[in-house]
Amino acid sequence: MLNKIWKMLTRRDSGWDKVLVPVNDHRHGPAFRLDPNRFSFIPEDDGHLPGRCSTCRQLWWRSVAGVCPTFQCPGTVQPVEERDELTSNHYARLYTSLEPIGLSVQEHTAQWVSSEASAIQDKFVRGRINVLSCSTTFELGVDVGEVQAVLLLNVPPSPANYVQRAGRAGRRTDSAALVICFAQRRSHDLHYFDAPTRMVDGVIPPPRVPMSNVPIIRRHVHSVAFAAYQRETSAFKDVEAFFVEASAGDTHDRLFVSWLRARPVLPHCAESCRPICTSHLTSRAGTGLRRSSNAQTSSPPSAGSTAPVKRSARTPRT
Image (cartoon, rainbow, N blue to C red; front, side, top):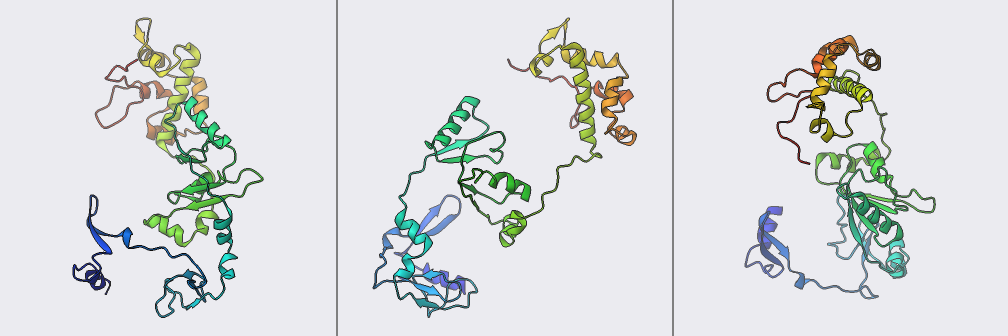
């Protein structure tokens, strides 16, 4: 039925060709748009009042046979008899009493240098900027004073993410928070659109680190060994110095390998690793504490795998 109605409206001889104008969209191909010249705006007055649904209380300016256009609403649209019923509406009072203000928008991302990010934050606090377009991790370590509203462009992955993002608004005691979350047409967003309390009042599991995660165990063992080398030698201050700058005729990455091979057993490292490294996990990870030096100084593996310590094939630029 809808396809037949659409074909009738888009026929050249239907009389709607002056309302539905054909256009060629670069993304969607041939399409139709409403001609804005065919629109007219009629102000509300005593002779032109809307109707209100008897069930959902929605206002409608057009109705066919008194049927409410709201989906599956059983109510009927009845004319509003008094204008005071419209002007007493909360939003009507806001629209007629508040003065509009301009928007000053600025992007705030981690790509800004510290000085520029601080300047943007200061302008927002002072009111010279009143809208910030931010990444989802914006709130970490950033204080921009009073935030009255947060607009989320999609539904966060979990209640914990929602609290992190929506919790930015209303942190001052004298402000009321407004959070608007836009649900896109995808399964995740539509699921929480139908059941918003599962997101707003959902369960937030405590942070945890699975002790059976072999990559985490391997990284922990390697970090302990690196820290021990640095404490003993204090040889480098940054990554560039570790891989590029030479000391005693060799670079620190090779000196670190030699340092490990000369110490097959590191007692203090073993003590640091023992709480999380069971014998079963260390055998799976290939990082037994007694074989720590071999695990970290093995020859570069074949393509597609990773090596704990491997010199880059390209010299970093300074």
